[in-house]
Length: 237
Image 1 (cartoon, rainbow, N blue to C red):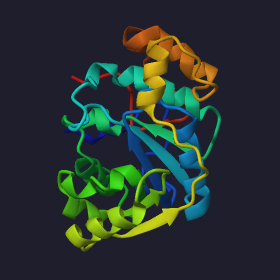
Image 2 (image 1 turned 90 degrees about the vertical axis):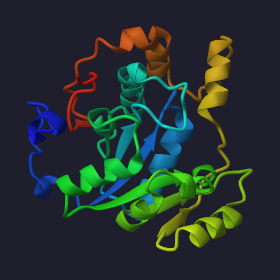
Image 3 (image 1 turned 180 degrees about the vertical axis):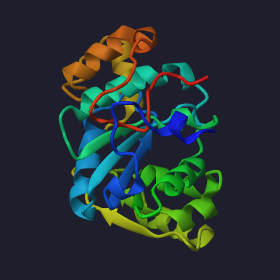
Image 4 (image 1 turned 90 degrees about the horizontal axis):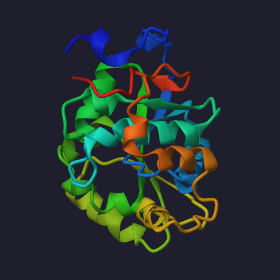
């Protein structure tokens, strides 16, 4: 895999690890669709951990969600871009679409650390994801590479999940952030959208416009926006 084919567009001038911010908060997910709960979580985590930037990483083909097709990646990428808007401390990367499928987080971290060896990476998780972390592919190695930032969520027993994670992953490092009582899932939002019901402002209008285009509408996007790093969102062959 050639470096220049993986990481950058012609418009991107951040071609060295020295140019990257020192402390980066990574936020991965399917974002199907992204909503204000995601945005609130990213913003509050950014503030509480003192990160330089948040890098959003839409998954191309998550191993635990068979219903998510890699062909929808460009569509979901565009929706995240619309959600982020003009927030300069939030960036968007298609790195997981540039790596072998399925999208394992440990592979993503290996690639990022190799490219940016002087950057401290943090990884944002919801408390619901923490309870499944020990089952992730390469979880032990992942815990040695990155510190986790865990957002408490209503309805999830964080203390029990944290204790179980520490018991099975002795090298895990984590910080906990306080979140407002805003508990919304993409599954709930998607169900309401599919039934043409009001989502009560939880999905901003620019995101809704892209959602209504469907995956076919998303494939025409060719990349090159100011918020993007690492390359084009178009599927690589």
